[in-house]
Amino acid sequence: MTTQLPLGTFGSARVAQGMVFTSGKVGVNEHGVRPESFADEVRAAIADLAKTLEEHGSHLGALLQVHCILSDMDQFDEFNSVYAELIPDPAPPRFTHGGALVQDFRFEIVGIAEVLGSAHLHP
Image 1: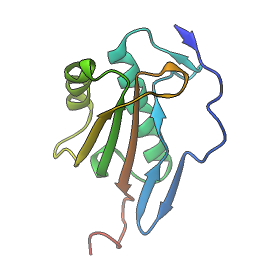
Image 2: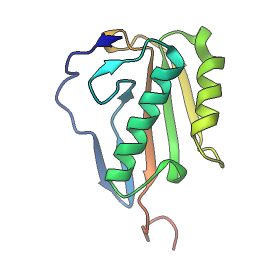
Image 3: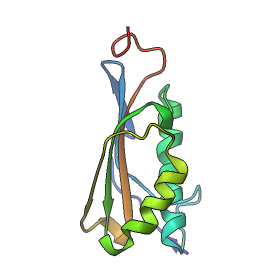
C-alpha cells in the first residue's frame, strides 16, 4: 500500500441547478492509502464518489454523466467489470479515456448527478 500526499486545494463538489458536480475522485481509503490492486483502487474511487454524492443530496443511481480516466488503457476490461458491478442500471452516459494521473494513480472518476427531490430536472 502506498500512502498518498494531499492532492491540492479544491472543492469536493458543488451543487447548482439541481445537480451535483464532483471533482475527480481517486482510489484511496479513509487513511489516505491507495490499495495495491487496480480493481480495489477503482472500488475505492467509486466509493469516494458515492460518499460525496450522498453528502450533497444524491447517490450513484442519480448519476447523469460520468468521466473516467485510466492511466493504462490495457486495464479497461478490469475497470469496466468493477464499474458494472458498482454503478446501478440504467448506467449513465460515460466518457472513458487514458492519460497520466497525479501521484501515479491508475484511475480517476468524475460525476454529475441529479440532487434528490430536485424540481429542476424532473418536474
